[in-house]
Image (tube, rainbow, N blue to C red; front, side, top):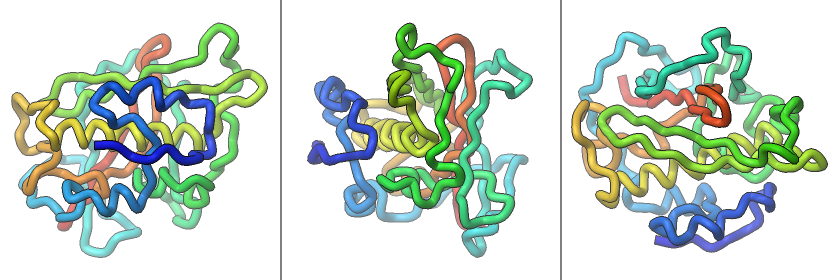
Length: 220
């Protein structure tokens, strides 16, 4: 599956370098996701989790954290980026679909510079670790920009959204198979869909390895 390369607002990210890996790391846009057959139908899931919260933005729905199997070494939260909808009071997350908007219009503090203390002559890329329950752990590159043009919160959210979309495509196509915890299935008729996923935080695991805390939105 391939998508046309268009201006994403963060032109430095080398999407073309990753096109040989299942052809999924190209720029994608909301209309392409909404038109993809794997992400249209709402899933039927019996997953249960004690960290369920009611969503203030969607009626008759609940949000729950996805329990990624990742150790957190920086437990003080000092290396954590939050993502919130700018029009919602007390927002705790933002839909990944909205993160794909080029302007970052839905995101609070979208143009804030990220990782201002990082010397980008020494480090240009972080690794996004996705350890979805029941699936093998995968990693994706996050381009953090240059000292002259550092990444913004909107740029960061967009790259995270791209990579989660790629992860969902791999699961839906069978390139990544689930081995356990089947209540967290991704794709297919009875698994979670991309449009249900909300981004909450991006936090440092250790060194240049980072993870995204995400929530799934489902009918109550």
